[in-house]
Structure formats: structure tokens, C-alpha cells
Length: 249
Image 1: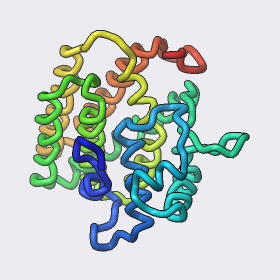
Image 2: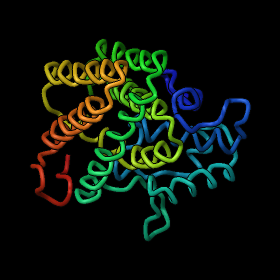
Image 3: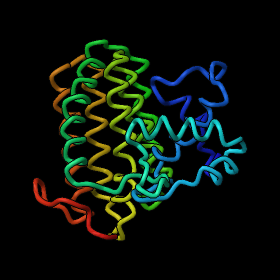
Image 4: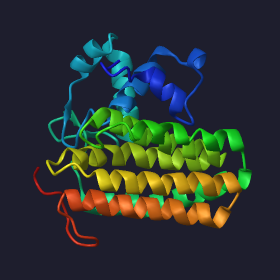
């Protein structure tokens, strides 16, 4: 658990495919704890992961940590280096471009399916994280910003009602989150205007879902993702369609 109160319990509440708390084993709790650190920006690209330190911080033995790390390596959220250490994969432009392309396809579909289901209570839940985001210094308060973004994404995915789609996007988010955190930590001026712009698009998306407008929901989610992609790429000095690796921060 971090000082911000974000831990496995937070992930259990907001990850669409997570088990109910009373169904979680110790191994699953350890896995969720590590996953939560990745999703909320506590492990940046290139960060080394010490099994012993993780076990100590999570107050558990080495075995469940090894198992959890093994699952995250299999999901490409962590990687084994030639000297057998574990790290968060460095940012690769080609991989990030492909992740964004897949997110546009899958999350546009998630928004469209959410609108088709037309469930008012679930739809209104999307306003909660955006209200919180309006109180933050976007990206400056890194972990709360990451938490708000991931909570919003997970609520949207849950609304799709599609376990297969949820699993696919969840895997993409695990691989994308360290790049997102890295981009937000680049020392550039705080951009209040962009925060208000992106939250406005998200509010319009919620209204489209609430109205059951499938086409508008798909379009708005894709527009939201595309504008956010450009925002992040500009922070790391990338031009759309150009470049290989992230510049050194």
C-alpha cells in the first residue's frame, strides 16, 4: 500500500476482470500489488525490479513474488535481461505506436458496446474519476493522475460487457502505463488547457454512451485517444510516424 492509499484493494475495485476480494489468494494479492505499481506509474521504463526488495515491501515470501513476476514477464509488462535481472521494458517507439493503434480499435469498440448496452448507472460512474481529475495538477501529481486515468479506463472497459475485449485492453494498458508515466514526468510546463480539453471530450463521451449513441461513442473515444497520444508524444519529442526510441529524459 502506498502513502496515497493505492494498493491491491484499489485494483480489485477498479480492474474489470479482477476477482472479488474474498476470492483472492496471497499469490493473487501479490500479483495485483505489482500490477498496481506498474499501472499507477511507480515503475518507470528501465526500472530494475529486485525480488527480495519486492518481497520485503509487500511483506511476503519470495515464492509468490517470483510467481507474480513470472506472470508479468509472460505478459511483457516486465522483462528478463541478459544478466537475469528483472526490469520494466525500456520505451520502444515501434511498440508504443502499435499499442496505440490497437487501443484505437479496441477501445472504440468498448465505448460502442457500452453505448449499445445503455446501462445508466454504469455510465454515470464514469463521471467520478473525471471529477477527481479536475482537482489534480495533471501529471504533476503523478500517482493520483495515473490512478484517475486507469480508473476511468477500467470503468469504460467494464461497461463494454466483453470479457475478451477487457482482457486484451488490460494487457495493452500494462505495457503502456510505464510510457504514460514517463511522458508525464518530462519536465515541461503544466498544461491546464489540455486537461480541461481532454476531460471535456470524456464528458461528451459519457453523454453519448448515456444516450445510447453507438457511433458517437466510438468516434469520441477514438478522438480522445488520438488527442492524448499527440499530447504524450509531444512531451517526449516525438512526431507522429517518426522516430524509433524515446529520447533520454
